[in-house]
Length: 455
Ligand SMILES: NC(=O)c1ccc[n+]([C@@H]2O[C@H](COP(=O)([O-])OP(=O)(O)OC[C@H]3O[C@@H](n4cnc5c(N)ncnc54)[C@H](O)[C@@H]3O)[C@@H](O)[C@H]2O)c1
Image (tube, rainbow, N blue to C red; front, side, top):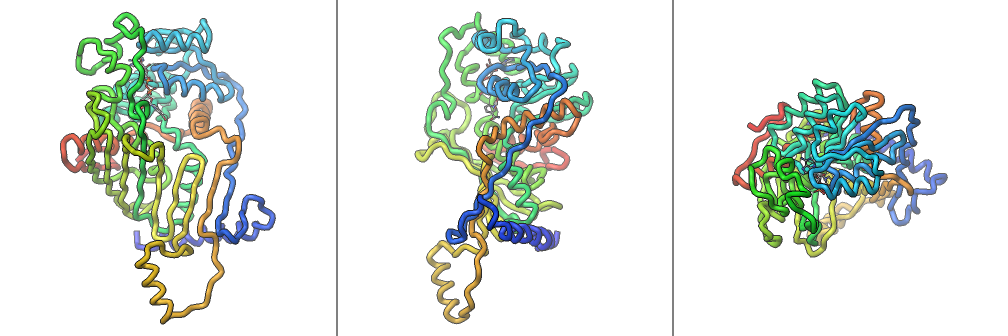
């Protein structure tokens, strides 16, 4: 791509829209007064779809996220939960209490896949089971909503891709931000050239509490009677029963994928969707276990650096991602895209666009230099467009999670493509998993995102 070629047209289209919005400003209640140079636009929610036929759903891995997925899935009209599977009896009892005693429950997921009355399954198990259960479910003719990250290791990706292609069934990975109004608006703005040419992006996830750092309670009745230990382990290394390993599975590399597989993967999904990228070419990570030294095998602080090659949709750029589980400011996350003409802060419900053409420099040296130059090149003052535009989801928005399930069930009903299929899922998971390889092996990982191969 020649520098400026993409931006030339797209920027004009962004500026055109800005002008239209400005014309409409008098009649548009969501535009704030020009005096604060801040414009707010409300993003409308999607309308409900009408429903003709019911989808029968099962959940495999009926823990925290699996059952949150069920709650959201059942908000979509025409969906019924018919079965739940978990290798811990307490989860099955909870599911029966909530969804009725006639709910079919089992510790063995294969019994769910063998049922004719199940159209779709949610895979909400720990990461080490995602690929295998998803592939078997697809082969059994079920549509699959698989929690992120799609795979526990990069080579498993091809197995899931083949299973999706071979079955022709709908397969969606559960990075729900992908379907959010925030991501969609950011994509639209990016493609219109609102920030010019992308050269840098960054994302961050901060926590500072035991639950956020994965120190979950261990149920009092946890034992070899209430837990099917072999079913939990699957193909992982055989070990004697250890409740910490199943109830705090994220801390162990045999089952979890560390902070990068858990959290970076959301940021990769959003980023790749917004800028239509297949992924980075080089990946390097550093970090450490600084505070939560409870026997875990993974760092609680991780920094990742990624080099994205240019392509048809964006210029080359660098990405920096961080997770910090020992952050005194706590509880924050963001994704920021920086271009030569502005930047966007993106969440699933809001996009804040700042345009550097209209905001003054913030650091003192640039300001001083500017004043010095102003004195010799005095210029006429300009009319200023808004320096900051804020796009917010309208009140009552049901959220990214709901939208992602709507998208999934629409795929199941109509056979339409979903937001995050297996190809996309692998391209989002692989750089996150490669961070672990880089961190533990102390090396740079070279990734061919087109062919989906580590070089
Ligand atoms: N999309 C999101 O925002 C989001 C948020 C949280 C978790 N997740 C993902 O959801 C998955 C589950 O995370 P969680 O926090 O719910 O964990 P969790 O421990 O609360 O739930 C996992 C459940 O799976 C069960 N399980 C383990 N092996 C099984 C097997 N072979 N068969 C049946 N059940 C089995 C466990 O007993 C447990 O109840 C993870 O992959 C995680 O990355 C996604």
